[in-house]
Amino acid sequence: MFYAYVLQSETNGNLYKGSTENLEARIVQHNSGLVNYTSKYGPWKLVYFEEFNSRSQAMAREKFFKSGQGRQWLKQKLGM
Image 1 (cartoon, rainbow, N blue to C red):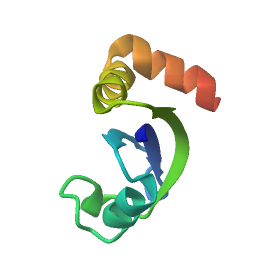
Image 2: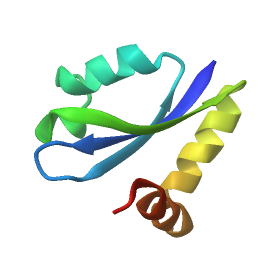
Image 3: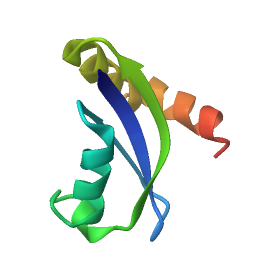
């Protein structure tokens, strides 16, 4: 399975959107400082994810999350 996910920084509340095949391992990478962008703003908590059958579907959803419409949708979904 593949995942599109959203993390929230416990430091400043920023959201990070990504996609991966192994969600648990990816969160560990983010919180261990192994991802350049997220290493500055951790720790991170998982606030939303969706599961897909293909990498391309997960990447398309990640792209949506990063769009203006997707950011607005996430704010409503997450109650922000």
